[in-house]
Amino acid sequence: MTVAATPGLVKLRAHQFARQTAFATPVAAVRRYPFTGVPDTDLAWTDPEVDAGSLDPIVAPYREAENLTAAHNAPALYYNDIPLMLSAMLGDDVDAVGAGTAKTWTHQPASLTADELDLYTYEFGDDLDGTGGKPNDWFQFGDGLLESLTITGPEGLGALSADLAWRFGMVRYEGSTESGLQPTPSVPTAALSVDSEGVPVYLGNAVLSIDSAHGDIGTTAISDALHSFTLTISRELDLKRLANGNGFDLSGYGVGPRSIELSMQFAKTADTVGVGSESDAWFSETAVNRFVEIEFTSTAFAQTAGSPDIPYSWQLRMPLRYYTREDGAIGNNTTVTLVGRAFYHSTLGYAFRSVLVNTLATASL
Image 1 (tube, rainbow, N blue to C red):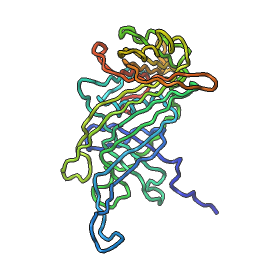
Image 2: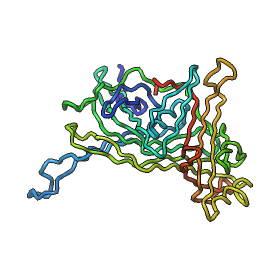
Image 3: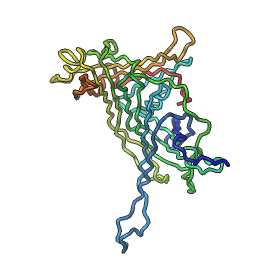
Image 4: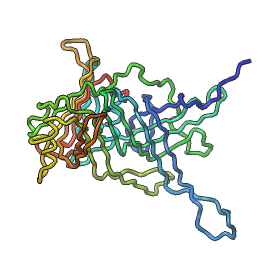
């Protein structure tokens, strides 16, 4: 006798995304990502505060504004997965350029104006897909974007990781019997799988440069000092809810201030402590501008046709001012952690700039 496995297996969960072309218009997913985590679908069922002649509830609850979020973790950050994260965080409808297999993605969010938001459809479910006599337990979230993105370069020079905090404006459930609450298009989108040959971003392939003048950015390497770093990008969002016959779906987003914070844990060297060091810049009575570049260059190639070959790479640049310093230790060695925040520099024309080279085509975002 054979016995089928109990359906609903954790390892068969899937996180599938696609960039939308219009607000309130979900689209079929085009790519599956190697994330962990689950969405939080809070429909805000609420008991009315009424006198009903009973110590226990009698009157039916009602719904209020939905709170639709998801917390995802990418335990290893792959070059081809980065565009989704930067797009959902920074917007501006960036596409890749490049005639060969190597594609370049440049994200430089505006500071003096507000870029258009990049919104995403997210399909979440597992092996319960309505086939083979199984029920269907898939969700479709629309109008998704990131409220925060945290990228960590770990002690030990291993693969970077990422934490993503999503916000969604609408949700549909494939198991719903109510008209208008089923996904359109239907989910799950078939034949999607994670990239089995992804190239990770390693801290061991990074070069950190910190300069005093904007024109020198990327020229002064800080060698044998960086243990780890954490880059956190976050923003404030206003959730616009206007009556338009679409139930609890959001009507739009309002965008508030953005914060870009870089925390770097250093060994104590002449570059990081003492006179003329980064700690010296932090201790100044007036803020000292620093110009930071972190550049990763992989040993794997995004393009091997032509000369020279083009490696996978990622360059991050930001003008920075330090805010805090903390002493610590790794093993028996002391460390110093400096935390700075990016600012808009009028000559550079940006507060943050990312140039990524990978093999992901625009249609696969």
